[in-house]
Each structure stands twice: as structure tokens, then as C-alpha cells.
Image (cartoon, rainbow, N blue to C red):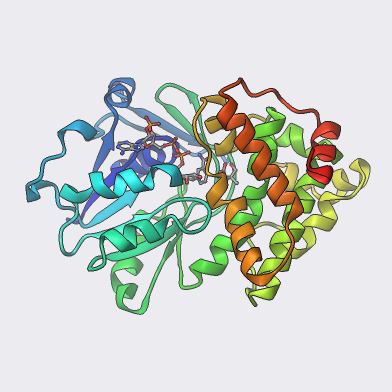
Length: 343
Ligand SMILES: NC(=O)C1=CN([C@@H]2O[C@H](COP(=O)(O)OP(=O)(O)OC[C@H]3O[C@@H](n4cnc5c(N)ncnc54)[C@H](OP(=O)(O)O)[C@@H]3O)[C@@H](O)[C@H]2O)C=CC1
Ligand SMILES: CC(C)(CO)C(=O)C(=O)O
């Protein structure tokens, strides 16, 4: 049987590890010691559609105990650290990577997989797009709070192996598909992640944030800039939400009563969902802003496209990251003015 190692036992890593283990896949999770302790009684997984599973027999590898022999070579190495942790992870995974290991990069945003490709030029490195939100309801209980299929990149030479992997791990709790259009798909996902920085600054759940027009106007401004860039790059954005991405800025800008009518699918998310950047900021960690909004700004620079809204929100997030202060929770009107004027 093929073997899986999940490197980075956080929200996505533990959810994935729990699903694979519950499906009977040979799976080990590389984790920090405190995570092993937290999950010593097993892991409960649920989702917004009512699916559930309970796993008692998780296998852990302590991140401090990785050995430099080949006993831990695996077939699939899922890298589930944040973009900001990929550089360190690329060194730490060395003992796990054999000549045939396929490395699966599960990060949001653009560009973090380059680090892995550089370090492992002879391995197959594929990207994975995670569309759904995972939150910790309580220690040992993770919840998938929104829709979407986990999408695994496929190339001509990995068609058979990824086809078979997809069939083996697709399930109700974690629907899985494969795609040969990963670059466009990551840009489409990035468009959704433009809500992350706003959510982190608003310091409220995503649903409550979307109910305030001024927050939506900020997200719309960020999205318009992404759409200018993808248009200039001739990228056709695949549809990852009920509405095509190009209409999202318009819909987000509608007055509340119209937005509530048109965007009922967008609002049909778990009221507790917060974005991964909110978790980072609330825990005083560096965010993934450089790989999200930063990826738009650097592509735009090459194309001579101005991106004031993205530039302004990046500066603002960095200011908070560097101040070490608690997340202040910026009211919608104030954030709108800051992003519009840059001050
Ligand atoms: N959470 C979500 O709902 C979603 C997240 N994503 C994306 O998925 C990726 C993973 O996010 P998420 O699961 O939320 O992140 P988390 O921070 O929850 O998980 C990452 C885990 O990896 C651990 N880790 C980092 N570096 C190492 C290392 N060198 N050795 C051992 N463990 C390590 C971290 O520990 P420590 O914190 O101690 O460093 C943490 O436990 C991100 O790119 C995110 O944007 C995509 C869709 C939704
Ligand atoms: C699923 C989504 C868009 C929101 O949770 C996300 O990717 C994140 O939180 O980073």
C-alpha cells in the first residue's frame, strides 16, 4: 500500500491526515510535540453538510525525531505548513523524501512551491488547492465549514498515479478532484483569499464581515486589481464560487438589501468561519500576505498596472504584524478610508 506523510499538523494537515487515516490509507503526521498530546484521544472531523468521522489511531512522527535514514521515505508527502513555513520545511523534510516521493504543496497564494521545486529538482512536485475552510471547534475536533473540492495538480507524466490517488481519497468529508489548470485555479482561489486580510483586520467572522458593505467595498477594490492583472496575463479564471469571479466586485459592491438577495450562496457559510490570516494575526504570527496580495502586486509591477488598494492593505497588515499589538478590529468605514487613501 502507498504511504502518506503529512508535514505540518495544523488545521489543514490534521483534517487531511484524519480523512486519510479514516479511509485506511497508511498515514503519518509530522507534528510539534504539543499537537501529538492534544490529539492523543483521537480526532473528530465534521463538516457543514453533517458528515462526520472519528479516528482514534492517528500515527505521529515528532518533528524533532526525523532521522536521516530512509525508513521514512514515503510515496506522497503533503506539505501543509503556511507559506511562511515552507522555507524551513523544505530543509526539515529531507529525511522523508526518496527518489520517487511525490511532493504535494498545499499552500494558498502563489509562489511558495518554487522553494520546494528548487530544493527537490529531481522529484515530482505538484500543487494542491484547498478551497474549503477548516476550523478547530475544540481540541481534537476539526470542522470543514465551507464547500469545494480539494484539487490536485496533474501533469502528463503523473496522470495515472494522481488519477488513482484521487479515486482512493475522494469522500464525502473531503471531495477531491484533479486539475491540469492549476495556475489559473490558484489565481481564482487567490481572488477569494483577498477577503483574508480584510477579515483579519475586521476581527469578526467572515459572515458578519460580508454583511457590512464597507468591508465588501474593500474586498471589491482588491479583487478589481487582481482581475486587471489576470486579464493582462490572459488567464481565464475557473469558476470556484457560485458566481463567476469577474462579477464578484460588482456583487460585493451592491447595497446590503440587494446583496442579501443576490448573494445568498455566499452568505450560506458557517457563522463561525474566520480566515487563516485571522488565525495568524490573532496568534501574533507572520501572515501569508506576501504570497497573497503580494503576488498580485509583483505581477502588476511587471505589467505596469497600479494596485493602490492591495499595496495599502499590505502596508497595514505589516504594520500590525510588526507592532506585536493585539488585533485592533478596524471598523468597516475606517478600513475603507485607510485603503482608499493609504493613510
Ligand atoms: N485554515 C484554513 O481554513 C485554510 C488554509 N489554507 C492554506 O493551507 C495552508 C496551511 O494552513 P493551516 O493549516 O491553516 O496552517 P496552520 O498554521 O494551522 O498549520 C501549519 C502547521 O504546521 C506546523 N509547522 C510549521 N512549520 C513546521 C516545521 N518546520 N516542522 C513541523 N511543523 C511545522 C505549524 O506549527 P507552528 O504553528 O508551531 O509553527 C502548524 O501546526 C496555508 O497556506 C493556508 O493559507 C487553505 C484553505 C483554508
Ligand atoms: C477557505 C478560505 C477562503 C477562507 O477560509 C481560505 O482559504 C483561508 O481561510 O485562507
